[in-house]
Image 1 (cartoon, rainbow, N blue to C red):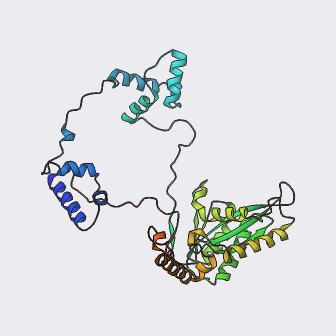
Image 2 (tube, rainbow, N blue to C red):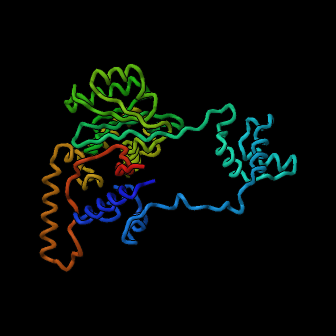
Image 3 (tube, rainbow, N blue to C red):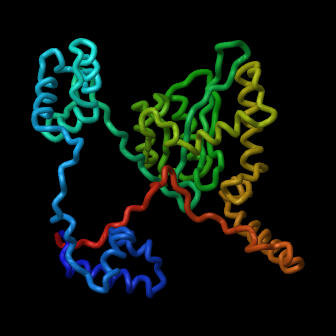
Length: 354
């Protein structure tokens, strides 16, 4: 239970924050209480102790009796039900014994209450996936993302394999190659060429990939350590953890001149990908980087270009203010890009004595 002194201290902190320009919602979030709780604390003009935990609460009319709870436990302890979940037990009792004791949720509730809710059966219990690791880039060549996709061959069932490396800050394709097969050795060739092309040998770098075998080979991981590259991997069966590469492949396969009917041979595939990468890096105005090209963003030219666009918008608004209902378009260059950013920023609430 929170003491009266702690409540008074919390209310005073919220008042001070609001005087400094904070909203009541934000201040309450930092403290760790809801707006309704704050209102209840201050609505009478004085802060009193919370009497809700001391209130007498009647037993719900639909609550299970002690005998019914005991019967639920008894049924769950039967040998023939030892490996069955409650939903299976309930329907078997109904079908085989014409009995209905309680709902499936009631079975779960009683088992949980008595500490007997555990995974049954030989199959492994389901595990929740941990949150993906967040990597943040504030400049080019800090965080790269790579992946492999197939390109259709001349006949049905034949494919070539395209490996691409993308700088998540600038969206520039920093390395690529198409191969006849999918292997860690081929991936190693691509990363070595990319590091040399960008002249970042020995510089710290995060390289993110999915859990595909071409990116987890022992010799490849050893080469990454030699190059001082930190490998990062997506969670199993979660494609969204490598969203930058997935988006790049979608762009690649949906451009108008993509040969959907297949490439004649590996050389034709390599030539087409070379043309796509040149277009993507030097001509494509990328929506995620204020519609500049990845190469302009990679080299820093985007700052001058975006400043000129901003000046043009200001001049246009000054010439015809009646056509502008608000501010001009945001042409500020982004300064931070995150791979798998945290969805909610968790703020430590103010500690109060219990």
